[in-house]
Length: 505
Ligand SMILES: C[S@@+](CC[C@H](N)C(=O)[O-])C[C@H]1O[C@@H](n2cnc3c(N)ncnc32)[C@H](O)[C@@H]1O
Image 1 (cartoon, rainbow, N blue to C red):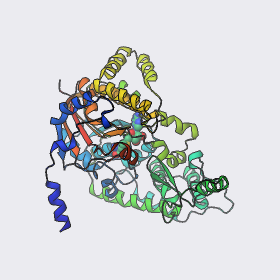
Image 2 (spheres, rainbow, N blue to C red):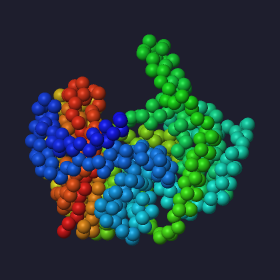
Image 3 (spheres, helix red, strand yellow):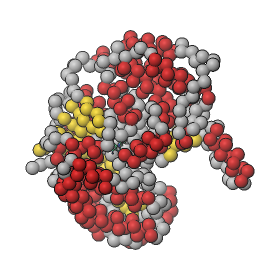
Image 4 (cartoon, protein in one colour):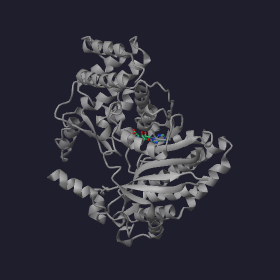
């Protein structure tokens, strides 16, 4: 009965107006005419859809998918979404599709299964491990993986072994002692072992995927959450107690901290089952290339030749202060990154944290070094002249002066975020062939009572660089606001959208 009611409800057509706003600035504190103008301009392109929902624009569906579940990448989208969009763009074997922000590699892997070539970038080393491991799925020698599993089942850490996993300040004491020792031991053992590079990389992926469950941390919100049984929390509470301060809450991130060896083996069994299934079902060996560039797309894109892409399917980091280098600190450190290297990657990310510095000068010098200073000026002038962007930056400055922002770094983040994204839109237009379709998944955001319509603002930049807006899919479920914004400025539902643009010359 409940199910029927839900299904009936999901067919109810919600009017598009429910997804539009008549005010972008709480209490009319700042001008919002330019944002209202965007709303009028693009309302006709909005399609409230059941084709895409929260499950397939997030990692939820991938959890059950063979291959795509190999790396728990919460920020990923699903294979189902990529398949849908590839169908919509009519991509064929041999075509080239780009994901400028590859993450775990969903776009690339779905393309590979369909014989479509793909190219993309990411700055997080985790991406390289994930894509390399999945891309090899038809190549693994099943017997070799079985031997690897057998060896790990009986792997003995010598009693006098004193190695510990490396750490940086934000990951110190993340594991119970026996897990910390095992993770280091297996890393050294893996280095010395004679397994193929593919098998070793697969093992690395399985270890990486185990770290969180075997630790006192959890990936919650913008920072790592810490368990009250960890030394970090116990020691912090001792200090607080002495100072008469309120103690940190008795929070358990999980009931049981998993055993490292058992968890790594579980992961290996999981991938082995997928490998066997995929190898026995897919015999078509049509080779599609995956070209992964472990660098910032901002610097990679301007170097590519023109007019070769059939399409783009991607989801950039959202403009929401989410810091990948903190959430994935355990994994980055395990892969060998030190304190400074983690900080450097933070600055390579598209500006999505309040710590992000402006990249404009660096970008200008970069274009100059390629002899493309005029192109830089052309793109940057368009960005700075965008009326809605100017209005948003003015509003955020005003909110900052009024003390309405939780963190003043938000102003620099938003400015950097859209400036950098707009450079990417401009370069994508150049590398797309005529008729190419570009799909960006993103969420609208709100800071200090100011709504930023990420989907419409991005579409206006895209149009300025030559794209035609074809459609803006909008999920039925909109996003709420943080509790602080709700309390201070009331509630405004925010769209989660997939913008679809085409290059039509
Ligand atoms: C939302 S995730 C993409 C997830 C991907 N769609 C998937 O299914 O796994 C965004 C990715 O962009 C990457 N990223 C951030 N800044 C970047 C940059 N400047 N160049 C390339 N990648 C970047 C992040 O490391 C992150 O993996």
